[in-house]
Length: 510
Image (cartoon, rainbow, N blue to C red):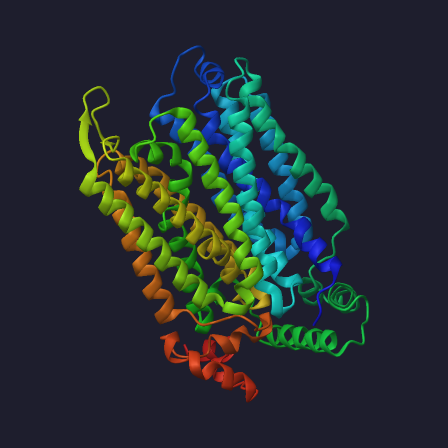
């Protein structure tokens, strides 16, 4: 099936939600260090307490957690399209409150409201993309979300770097205010995007669904054999699900869907336990630990890190649907694990770890070994590149494509909420780890990556090239997925449709 330009335009436009997500999560790290911001938030003091900093960053994550859960009923009742519009409005309200904040209370309130919008977008956008995309390039189109996230983070960093030397409140109001523009574009532009064809069929609007499929996949030709086949497959799946009334949250814990829910939650948890958000957020500190003492040099090193993140995310857009999810996830975990272990080991072997008497915290000094310093910086870059081409995009692709239509929004909502919950948990203990076990932090994340590689190899079935309606068959195999990899292709070629492996028959067996 040849994808049309309209399909790419629609998916690229929806991915602006990822930009909002990336920008808002990335902008605050620079803002928190700006003196005008600190004075406004504290009423004239020269520093933010650790609690104040944690609340400002943590309330966004709390809002994201709640927003991702609220998105499920909105996506089901109002549509994926209208949910994205509502989330954009909520996000803009939060961004406006942050931009206009005159005190600490307004700022944390704005962060929470913006988090509601970000959480909703982070769930609705991958879901929407997965249901628009043909199976041949579904991984590519959902990966646009991650590309937009990385672009948002990069833009936020450089905007903050450009305004940090302004001595007025404009230094932090400009970075926070800029995010209103893309969210407004997303809000207005989504009005003209099509509804999800699968949501339309689920609501009985079959003719509209066929028209959308034809417009996106065959330039309006409703008689195209592949369009007709996909349309009939969706109809059959919806009718089958209606006969057994599968639509409640309890269905997530029955049959093969329980297995999918566990795998979906794990992949989101693992995405956070790569340590990527901590590496990106604390990049200046990490580069200083690695021996980049000058603030400007550290800033440039962090900026290069952001650019590398964006460029490496282009790889899965080109190759994810060729290589498959398993190969990309396993290789990415191996690259990240090796980079973190080498970074930690070299830092532990060559650095001087000492206790800062003023802060009562452990610090790392690598200034005496330039070669080791540069080696650790290169390992951080390898780590970021490894994440960007693998667990970054696949963390959104895999959960968005594995659930049955009737409970897809609910399943995706729970897996996305797990991501935000783990993001919050890790944001709490990583700063402590960096100032207590120092280089051991990198060894910890390296070991986590090793566990992830083994887990994917053992338990995660391959989903590339399969339609959303074929996922019942994909997950009908044994729990140890690696045993079924060689048989999977022949199973589909034989037209395997053994109902014992489907959601509904499994439900009866449980």
